[in-house]
Length: 379
Image 1 (tube, rainbow, N blue to C red):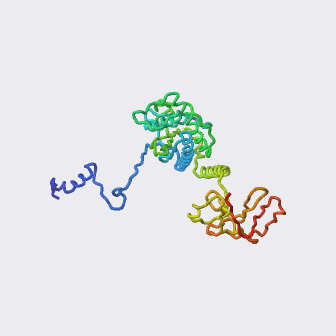
Image 2: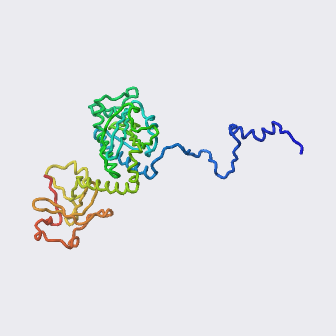
Image 3: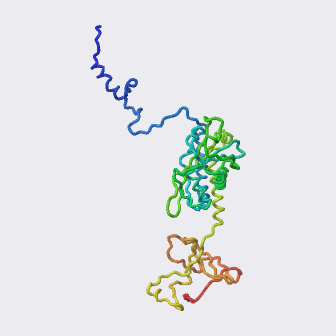
């Protein structure tokens, strides 16, 4: 078999295009069209084999629910302190990272507060951007609490740190309430630093921590004052390790939901709502109203046998019979109002078959009666 030399043109024809497309790195990759290679515009998420993970997806979901509830409760508390509308929400789901990466991402200077959560052993940290901390301090000291420019950001003084920690006390209370769905803790501040590297939260920079980050926005009646400020909470994994078995989203949801419903029910029982009865309702021409004088009599086209409406808040709820108890006016509930029922209910003898005579029961509502129609005199 004779040997044949391959020319440069033939080599270029064989490999030139592939080398040009692939940059000359390695052999050409054949596209089989089987869908194994990503199409243009498809998002490919790379897997980092060096990523530090200790908690499962289910456990992280529990922490997400816990801190979402914390954000919803701490926002109103901070609003009361600042007398401004404060919105707090999770920037993203809590993430697992290393302590070194957490510290490296913090601004310098910042407001970094170390706290403990007994009976859990070990410290955690709360970081608040100075762009958020300084307006809060200014507001608490009687200022306007306006946003500060980037070149005006500075480390807080010792007095300002004391003022800020008084404000952050409500933060720990909200955090304690949220954690109570998993474990009862008693959080308390220990130290504060403005330079992140001075706060030694873990022994090694490679130690795993869980970080929950929040976006904070402050508004007044004229519009936004501050937007995009950051608040973050960092938990070392060694702190959470003893309670990993309790970090189950199902148990948190059931226990938390029952507690929330109970708190909501207890709060609603104390709410006062306006309640009033509409005895008559009619239309009046504007001409007649403009000529109305003291002593004029308004006659309504309403029969006393028709029920009165009982309104709670802004909703029509009951049909009721007007009357008196002793020297007080009263309304006796006869039926619920059907949303589709627009005309008053006729209060006949069949409305309440078990009706007791007012003479039989001393506190029974005495029915108001007249000759079938009535007048209302303006005095």
